[in-house]
Each structure stands twice: as structure tokens, then as C-alpha cells.
Length: 150
Image: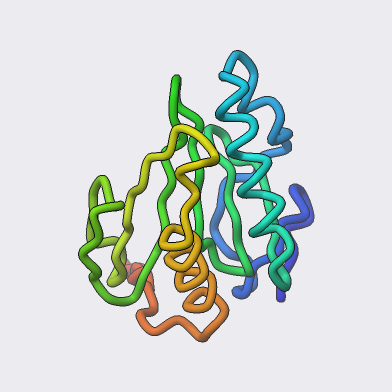
């Protein structure tokens, strides 16, 4: 496992391309409702207790990862926009939107309070977590450009 020397984030791949952020999670919840803060606290207390979970603030979101992101949470005005990443497409009423994302499926969920954090929701996050723990089923590789000789 590789750690970025600047932001100290840990990655499965050495020299993983990323954006360093030294932001604190609390900064993302400034001027947000108490319900959203309580929802985030409930999520972080449950998911943060799973093995090897790292919780980091990015520029506009909170990333939950195990060397590979499995949940990205973005505080909005009156709700949290959550994205989980799955290897197979699933149809659930809980999903606001589903997109193909580098050979996987990005499933978007929106929650407004901690009472919406149902067993179905936590089971889907756990599935995303378990898939992130395993060796990537679909590897995204950037094509390297070959330099042309004069």
C-alpha cells in the first residue's frame, strides 16, 4: 500500500493519481442543517467501524475508502448525495440515478436524515465496501502515449 507524502492518503497503487486535500470533514458541513450533520455522524460511526476504512475530506466531498473508494458523500443544501460503486448493475427504488463508471456502476442515493439510513441502504454500502476490498474486477488503465522520435 502506498501513502501520498503530501496528504498522507493511502492507496493500493503506487503513485496513484489523485488530488491532495488537507480539508477537514467539518468544513464541508458549515452552514448545513443539524439533520445533515446528524446523518453524517450516524454514517461515519457505523461505516467507520468496518475494518480498514479511511474517511477523508476531498475538495467538496467526503470519501470512504479501503485503498479504493466505496462511498463518496457530498453535502448539499438539504440532503446528502451519496455514491456507491458496484460491479454489477442493480435496480433499487433507493437509487436516484445509476451511471456506468469505468467498467463499474456508480449508484447515486440521496438522504435527508438519519431515519432514511435503512438496512437496505447499509447492505448496499456493505456490498460496495466488500467489492472495494477485493482485487479490482475491472481495471482502468490509462493509455500511455508513446513519444515520437524526430
